[in-house]
Structures are given as structure tokens and as C-alpha cells.
Length: 264
Image (spheres, rainbow, N blue to C red):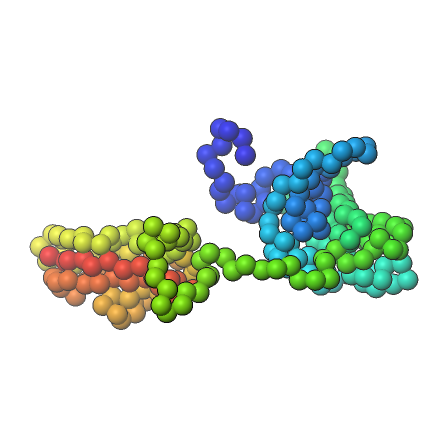
């Protein structure tokens, strides 16, 4: 990202950032090479040092998934020239401006872009019906021995992510080595220890707000669920009267956050 950028946001996740065909082929080649990326070259030369994009096991899993993508209409996945599955992915940009397809085998990584040079839309043309057939035609023209599976035959050695490690019952947890979960659900309002002092006789509905976590969220007051909408990160609660209450929010993965509050 540019040095002046505020940081990645939703448009980045949704594909709203321009990426060149050259860069996309570089990334897919990294998957085919076990997660290690090297810059592409237009002429033969000394290869640059690889940069690890993802772990070998993650790259293996992604390639295996992409090998199961259905072939374009009218194209068989296997054949005389193409004896192994091609791991490939199609894509279409907003407004039918770009149709993409990227494919990998052990010997080749190919990227295909179909669109108009001036960026105007091509309605009805998307990756699966325009770029994918071109990709498969190119693979049919390549030498057969180099069309082996892009994923290695042997499953790469796996190490459990830090957040998923299991500890033996006798194993102590070092607080200094504890790993914060950046995706954990947390309460934005109310915060723990908050005292709410409404106007006399005014116990109207208050909005409970959470951040993080995977939806749907479940809200509880003193252990009892209250109504909420699955797609939202907030809920409304009307206290029955003055007193203490425990507000709890639980996400779809079972992670939770709670706050003890007082309504005066």
C-alpha cells in the first residue's frame, strides 16, 4: 500500500484495488511453488530470492481446492494432452470491465485477461465464459509432460496455528506468551463497570454494541438471551428497573465478552 494510505479497508477485501495481470500471475505462481513468490522475468536471468506469501500447507490446500473447479462448458477436465487437473480460478470485475482466469500446473502458471483497452464494460462477458476457455486452450497447446498437478504429491508438514495449539492439563500458560486474538468479539458499549444514570422514570431501550467476532452474535442479560438480528453487531435492551446486570455477547465461534454494569 502507498505510504500515505490509511490502511486496508473493505474495498481491498472486495477487490476494489487495481491489480495488473503481471502481478496476479506472480501471486498464483507463488501458490504453485508452495507459497513462495518470486518476481516474474520477461527474459532468462538469475532468479531473485523468494518471498514467502503463505505456508506450504496453506498453498497446498488452496491448489487442491482450485483443482476441483468445474471446467468451462464444453471442456473436459482430463484429455489426451491434459492428463491432470488444472488448478484454476475465474473472476469478473465490477460492471463486466475485466474477465480473468488464472491456472496452474506443475510446469506452468497462466493468466488470461479479457476486456476492452479503454475499460468500458463488456456486458455478459465474464471469466468463466470468456477467459477460462482461452486458458484451457493454451494449456492444450503446451507439452504434456509439464502438465502434472500443481500441488505436490506429498502433503506438506503442518504445524497448528498458535491460537489452535492444545495444552496438556499439567502445562502452565505463561501470561507473557499469551497471544491476543485480533478477531475476538468485544463490547464497545457498555463497558465493564459502567454506571448508567437515566433521568428519573426514564428506562428507555439502550443500544448494546459489539465489535469483532463472527456473526451471528448472541446477546444475553444475566444469562438470558434477548432478541437481536443475525446480521447486526448491536441489540436493544430495556432495563426492567434499577440494579446490576451482566451483559454478554457470544459470536458464532463461541468467543465471548461480558461487562458488569449498574443501572441507577
